[in-house]
Length: 171
Image 1 (cartoon, rainbow, N blue to C red):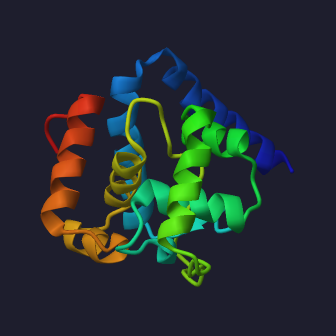
Image 2: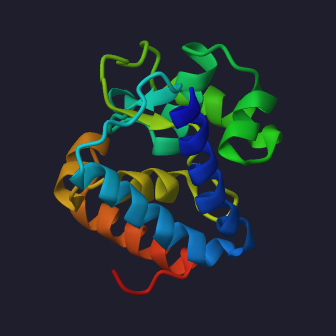
């Protein structure tokens, strides 16, 4: 119990200085931290709700697939989905109906690899957020393009655009 309190205090002190940093400086630190965890073989918590990578298909856009998954599999309302994705709730219903008309069957949710629901921001598109997250945890552009069923160049270009938006010019 004493060791746990001491560890919690250390973590609290370490992270308290992050509150003073602007977001542009936090993103590169976050990416470095994820790389560190991966190098040390520290597992990511698997009990967090997430979006399975297997839902992505060539028929639906990344946004459409995520909205369809959250609506049908997690039974979330449009405002709840909009809140998670940091988007306006109005278009979410339109996006869902479009996705449903394009792809009627249920999505494949068999993947063990998931994308946390906390990665989305107002500054990046949903696609940029997904690619930036997968890249930050160590996936190559080739692997990301295979997982998301998108062209390699599209993935690279989208990641490059996300880096520019976040102010990360060198990697």
